Amino acid sequence: MGGSSGGGYSGRRHRTVQQGLSDADINKCLRELLREYNEQEREAINRHLDVLRDSLELTDDDVIRFIFGGSQSKHTAVNGLSDVDALAIINDSSLSGQSPDTVIRQMAERIRQRLPQTNVSTGDMAVTIKYSNGIEIQILPAIRTKSGVRIADPGSNRWSNVVHPERFAQKLTQVNQANGGRVIPTVKLMKGLANQEIRSDRDQIAGYHMESLAIEAFRNYRGTKDLNSMVRRFADFSSRAVLKPIVDPSGQSRYVDGYLGPADSPQRQRAAKAFQGMLNKFDACKTESELKKLFWS
Image 1 (cartoon, one colour):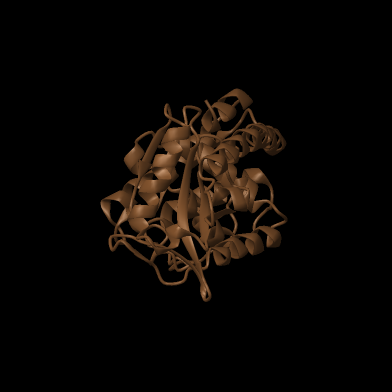
Image 2: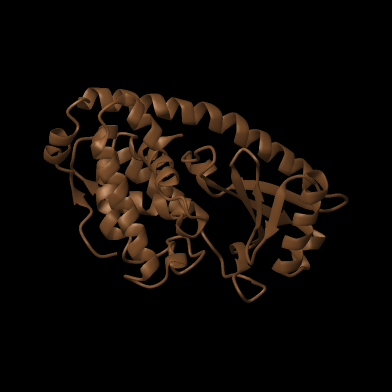
């Protein structure tokens, strides 16, 4: 991916705008928001995943196992925002000989039977469950082979080449550790900010994409490692970086952000404008109330 990911975000501009809030005030407010995110996230998501496990229990020789592959495994989930992906590993099962489309449809039907009032939809790769509390969970069926895990290959109704979902999580973990454990909290906050700023479903930034932008933004980051500075760094960096595709290290697809089209596409231009808008609104907050409302209504 082009561009430099080093450096920090200059605070000169925001200090002239945010007359009513000190850096300490902003960081305190952001920490409080994180506590609220974390408290609601764990209980709600774990409850939903427990029910989904029960609904997908198989009989006889069928074996299915959940491996968290999305925001849940990387601890970046935010209530109402996250693409909480779980790989449903099918081992030694009668389903393992079926096509991805058949497996996805059967899984969706079992979930609908257990959750008849819940929005359950299917796509080329996964079953998506949308809950009334705003949480959206995607379950990707996967086949375990001797060489590794295979998931649905979009558009072909065949199982993919071997993918490595752990590679992405490892990269995010490494960048997070190199920055004092503050990258993952920054991603949570940015997901909240994006959800408030981007109201159109068609323009929402995928959670996997947000996490990939974070890896690029903080790979060689040398700025101040507090939430205030890092949120600004993320928004400022992403307003430029989102214009170019990011290669997917897991092998799941060519790009993590292919849904936005080629470089400099209209969708990417809108995303760049949205990130710049997030930064501008963050800079303009003069009270803690305004700041909290920006992240969470």
